[in-house]
Image (cartoon, rainbow, N blue to C red; front, side):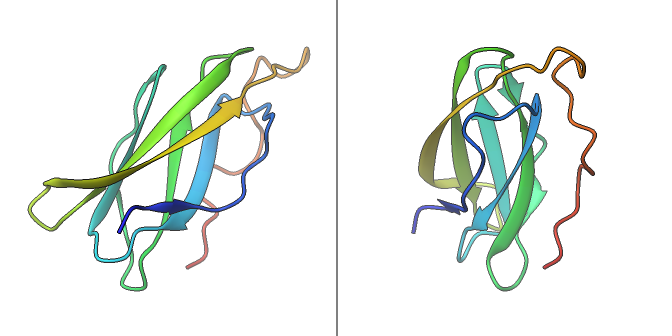
Length: 103
């Protein structure tokens, strides 16, 4: 099955946005946006993942999530849209912890 993406803020002021979701049966997940490809992240035994994708600042963004099997072969994709809105005082980078997923 295609990965799912949990609720995320839209718009977001995070240039490096964390996404959480599920990818049952996958061993890794990757994300591609117009700003580049994220480092693949592990999917836990219950199918949960957390991955950060870089967004283009002050623009609408499309992020494609791709589930990878144990051989690294791509499976189904999930595409989401998110808009980045840069705050004047943070240069677009969130002060929130990068990897706070508790799975």
